[in-house]
Image 1: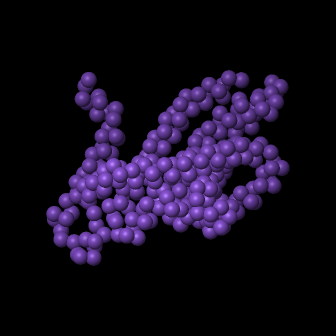
Image 2: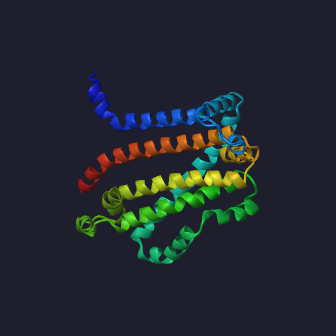
Image 3: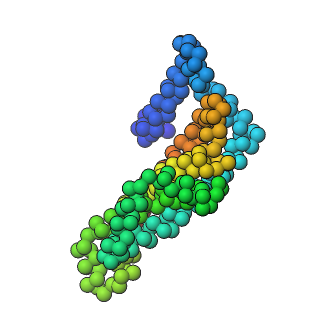
Length: 265
């Protein structure tokens, strides 16, 4: 294959990877160029030390154990937020009565920092998986609900009236017009929900857990194990990148479906 064509097709990816490599090399080289003060040296690490710690934690099963706990809380909380937030956003967008009834409570709950609910959740459900699932749910449900609601409210009324003129019922209007035209808003809400869900996992495990990657980071920080802290941070960053790429793939697939769906009536 033509190298120039390959470079043109993957230019952003190549530059992104190259930039990360340069940063890692510079980071690794800092102790060679500069003698750190004794206090700072205690809290400084390098990519090679982080990689060595990651390998050790991987071999002894520590990462697997903590990752499993965090993944369960993340997936369960995110799934619950989708099950609740998506239908509720659609219903609020289509029903003026439900909108007027729920909008003040949704606005107030969304404006409240989620961390204030954590002490109550720990008191009610204890230090365990359920308190983490619910704090993840509390963080993720509102971006998805609100974005879905806004997407439904911004659907072109002309399209709705045209579909109704052909005798379509509410379900057919939802399926043919509302859902396809709300997809960009729903995807944007899902992106925000994933970020909030990961934040919920971290916060929940910092203060209300004895297992998980967030707990591993907090415990390592307490014991001045900077390498282990960076291992946990790197895993969360990798999760975020992977999920963002997955959402982009989903968005591209739905984008190709959306125009056909919108024109099918």
